[in-house]
Each structure stands twice: as C-alpha cells, then as structure tokens.
Length: 127
Image (cartoon, rainbow, N blue to C red):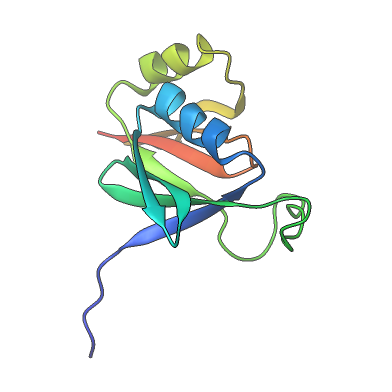
C-alpha cells in the first residue's frame, strides 16, 4: 500500500490579500508571498499545514459557496489549549462564532468559526 502524507489545502478567494490578512490576524498564520508564472502567489502556514489561497469569485470561473451543510469537505480542525480563552481572544478581534464552545465528549471541547470565504474552522481541545 502507498504511504501518504498531508501536503496542503486550497482556498479560493475574491480578495486573496484580505483572506491572508484575516488568517494572519485571527489565527496567527504565517503569510508567505512568492511569484509563480509571473503572478503573485499567497500561501499560509498554519498549525504545520500549508494553505494555498488562489483568486476566485466573479470572472474567475469559480462557483459560489454551497449552503452548509453540504456533501464533501466540511471543515478543518485546529487543536488548541485553553479553548475558552482562545475563543474570547478571537471574539475580541471581531470574529463571530458559528458554534460556541461546548463539550462533545467528556474529554473534548469544540467551537466553530468561519473564514470570510465561508470555510468552516473547528477549534478543539482534548484533555
């Protein structure tokens, strides 16, 4: 059987720079800018994962977001320590949560927020 390792996820955005700034401001992502085929490319490093941001929206051939919930990739999750404090810090930055912190199991507490493009992000703390 082949061996697989995670490489990246890809987000399409009508405003690549604004999306990168949101992930940097709200989640502390590292923004990495480079040039690819003569065009600016914006990538993020977040929790050890690579996130690539590409242009999307009007005139790019991309479709609008489907309504949640939908089939396919639903969200990505980030582990944190002190989830209630982390949520309070993010809320202080003006970000609303789709799902407030709560326990789904005795040892697991979760919350959900949404990026400007509608990407669902789960924060979870396991004890």
